[in-house]
Structure formats: C-alpha cells, structure tokens
Image 1 (cartoon, one colour):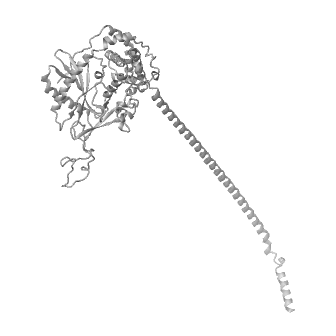
Image 2 (tube, helix red, strand yellow; image 1 turned 180 degrees about the horizontal axis):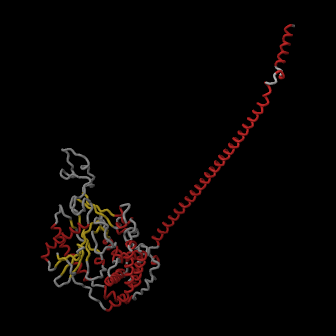
Length: 556
C-alpha cells in the first residue's frame, strides 16, 4: 500500500516539474529558432532547385551534343557509303571502257588493216576500199601505155643481169678465198660462203648500174660460239630496239654434254675423258675477244665492220695482180660497199655485208644495211638488225610457182621502184624506200588470189599497190611481213619466236617525227602527181642511167 502511494506521488511530482508553465523564459526562444531553420531550409531548397535546373540544362546540352555527334557519324557513314558506291561504279565503268577499247583495237587490227594478210588464194573481196581509192585524183596510164613503158624503160636483158651476177660472184669467191688464206683458224673469224639477196637475186632490179647484195656469214674461232638474243625474247624492250638483236660470244664447251668437270674438283689422279687435262671447262667464262665492246660479252658492230674492212683490204692486196681493174670502197661509212673500176672508166658496184646466222634458220643478224628498212640507226653498237632477205627471196620464189605465167607482181614492184627513184632525184631522198614497196607487195601477194596477178591486170595491181602505200602512210602503220604474222605459210620455216612476236610497225618513226612524216607524205604525193608525165616522157626517150665513179671513192 505504501509502495503504491509512493509511486503515485512520484508520478505527480514528475508531471509538475515538467509542466511548461513552470519555465516560461527558457521556452520563449523556440519559435525564433524554428523560423530561422525554416528560412535556412527554404534557402537550401532554392539552391537545390537552382542546382537541379543547372544539372538538367547540362544533361540536356550533353544529350543534344551526343545526338548531334550521332547524326554527324551517321552522315559521315552515309557519305562514305555513297563514295564507295560511286567509286565502285566508276571502277566498273573504267574497266568496261578499257575492255571495250581493247576489243575495238583488236578488231581494228584484225579486220581493218588493209589489206589483212590471208593465205594464198584468198578472195579479192577481202580487200575492200583499194580498187576505187582516189589517190588524190591520180589517173594512171592505161595498160597499153604501161606495157610500152615497161618494155622500153624497165625490162632489162636477162643476159645482162646473169652476166653481172656471174662476174661478181666469181670475183667475190676469189676474194673470200684469199681472205681465208690470210686468217688463222685458231685466232681469226671463220668466213663462210656468200649468199645473194635482194632485188638482183629476186629479178626486180631497176636502177642502173646493176647492184649485187651479198651476205657473208662468219663464225668465231674455237672454242667460242655466237649466241644470238632477239629483242622478242625479253619481256620489256624499248620501242627503238624492236627488230634488233644482240650477239653474245660464249665458250662452246660451256653447256655441251653437260660435263661436270668444271663444277667439281677432280683429284690429281683423275682425268676427264671429254675435255682432257689441258682443256678444262671454265663455267661462266665469256670470250675476251677484240670484236666485243669493253668488258661486255656482246659483239660490237663497229669493230666487226673495221675488222671486215681490214680483212678485205688485205685479201685484195694478195690477189690484185691477177686482175686488170681496181677495187675501191664506194662509201666511207659503209665498209662493205665496193666498186670495181675498169680502165675504160666504167664501174660495177656490189655490197659485201658481214652477217651472223640465227640458229639453223634463214634469219640473219646484219651489222649494217646500205638501205635501212626500219629507217633509223641502231640504238647502240651492240644491236644487230634482223634481216629476212633470204626468207623474202624464198617466199617470192614459192609464190611465183602458184601464179600464172607472165604474172605482173614483179612488174608492179619495178614500176613503183622506178617512180620512187626518179622522185628521189628530183626532191631528195625520203624515208619511203624500196623495202617498204616490197613489203606492201608481199602483203598483197598473200591476200590476193593467184588469178588476180595475170599480165593483163598490171594497171589494176599497180593502182592497188599505190593505194595500199597511201593508206599505210595515212595510218602511219606498215607491219613487217614476217614478224608476228601468223598467216605466213609454215613451210617458210620461220623461227617460232619471230612468229609469236608482236607485229613490228615499219612506219613507227613517222609517229614520233612529224617533220619527217610530212616530208615523206609530200614526196609520195608529188611522186603520184608526176607519175603520168614521167611515164609518158620515159616511154619516148630513155636517158642514160650510167654514172661515173664518185670522186670520193677510196682505192684499196
């Protein structure tokens, strides 16, 4: 009971002590502190709102920048895709254009080269546009006038040409035999028998006096041999070296029989049964020959010509007591150009040209030509010109067997050569040569049927030959007849490298030299303009074509 009262009293006292009215001064500041706290909270809330606005603006700005960057990337990607598409389209268009250009070029070369060489017996319709070509208004004389002109001015007595060839060949045989007797087989070049080439041996010689062209092949002394290298055997050859070759002088025993005695070291008591003791193969060795240039293993044309000139002079001095005439060099810059001068004042020219045979074919590498077919000088002294003169003679002989009796093909060539030579005397020589005339005739012979070359077709075939030359000059393109011409009969036996080579344009100098082209073209049209009057004049009067010995001839 007492404990309960105690508890009640304790509760009452505690309530009285804690009543707020008992302590009025201490509790009077509570409202003031609360207002300050409220103001501070409001200020802090405003700061938070401002900070929130700033953050929202920053987030909006970053989002806008990100969106702009995304749009820029998409735009760049789109532009790149468009560029790739346009580049792909351009590459495709360029490729198509290139393919189209190549197709057109191949078609033009195969079908628009007039005339395109075909096999013997081809149809005349394969040569469109030549029969009626105007030739700038040229009207050739009729067949009767041409026949009369040919008989009086061009056709020579066959006996004269035969006697000239016989005399020159006999003298050259004696001269070369004397040359061989002066040479040592161990150290000097070995000279072989001569080969007759060009117009004198193809029966279309026109100019007087009659001129014989003779190839003189030669070989090196043992143990060396010549290794010709044609331009078409290399992958990339400059244009000015096309149609040329180089001749490497190597030891003949380097690659024969495949002996290994030079590649291995033999014992002192071992002997090679092939080469013996004193003839050991030295691999990689080339000829240290005075006819090569410097340290090069390639044969030098200038040194060969100097050697040949010296050898001919020595040979003539050995046999000159047997003859009652003098022998002289006709041209100082052409060592093989010789003239026989008789006591009566007449002379007989002929050309001896040192050549090297290519393998076992009728193709020869020539040190020089009196009439350069390509119309230029060799790029270097180690470049030798390829001559197809023997092949040309064989082709004309083979073709003549299929033509009618009295065919007019050589008559056309003779008349054209006559007109060209007379024009050269009037206006000076041009780059157009007899070799170009013969090349044009060979193309026509391969394209026309044999019946088209009957004697009564002389005027038509001559007109066609001149039209072909005109077209070739205007296009600045006359392909070599043998190089790259797969339509030449296989019976000719051309080397496969020559048959597979790219066609060689004999008129390429006209593409590079405008003044030379203009002069040649003007000279050609001048020749055509003068042809009717020239034929008429020479049909009535035949001037003497025999000249005297030039004053600059060098007596041997």
